[in-house]
Length: 353
Image (cartoon, rainbow, N blue to C red; front, side, top):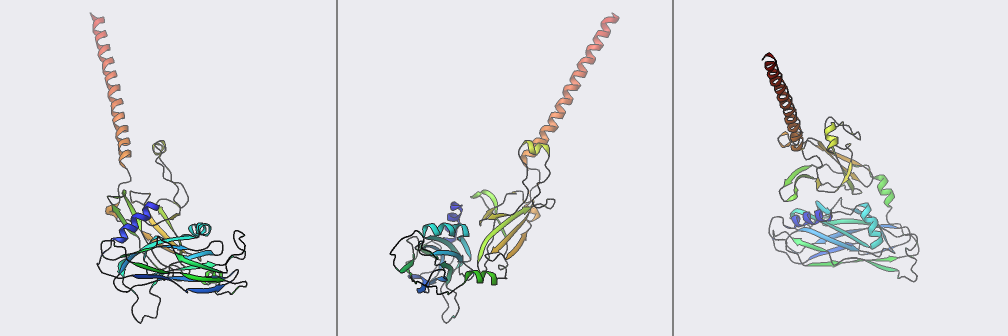
């Protein structure tokens, strides 16, 4: 999976439209705050450009995991449209043990900076929800009441120049004061409960490259959720004659060769997703699920001209083998019958003599 992310990130770096730029600034907003035990708060990751355009962002967020916990990584308002590495809940759980959050993604066509006079937040890369634990993790005594959330050395942005040139980047951290009492700036649980809106509509694209995934078919898909953010994607491949969760009937020779089709079911997926059914005889369904559990379902039926016969080459050989074997047996039986007939005929002639 890591190799897939690196490959997609490399592809994003080499997108179109050359341009020239000066140093970009990646920063956190708000840059200061005071929060107490049990408080949840949001920090926006934003970027400002002086001139020119970028097309890829790779980030590393560092935070003291003994003093803060990360609840969510939200991308609903992000300027990044294709995510190579968007932290899942499982990955965020690991971040709470290491104090490091990784993310990366690209902007096809490039991002050239916030439009002057734009009152919106068009320069947001991501929104991170943190929580101050009720008890200090690790039992460390005499800790400072001021902590920093900062960018790691693996934070980079790349120019939209068609060459994958790394831009000069300045970063600014956020300083958080830990108080004795809760301040209650944000209630993440209430935000989750209020979210009744599913993720935005999206499309599924079928792709195949000779040097990508050993020439196998794969799909890409991406969307946003402007309320609580995308939690995960799930993919289902199912043929018209199959039922969800029920193992299809399989011919004995398929079972003998261990070519049985598993019961079709939803699987949590990364993007890109390599299709299991490379014959393209299955309907492909993708669900985008936000952090509140709302779903957006999209279906894709591969074009008929791309679909392969359901009899794959090895099965053709099996049929050929059965046919050839039957013919060979018939020939052997015929030869035996012919030999016996000739033998009987000779015996009959000898008896007459």
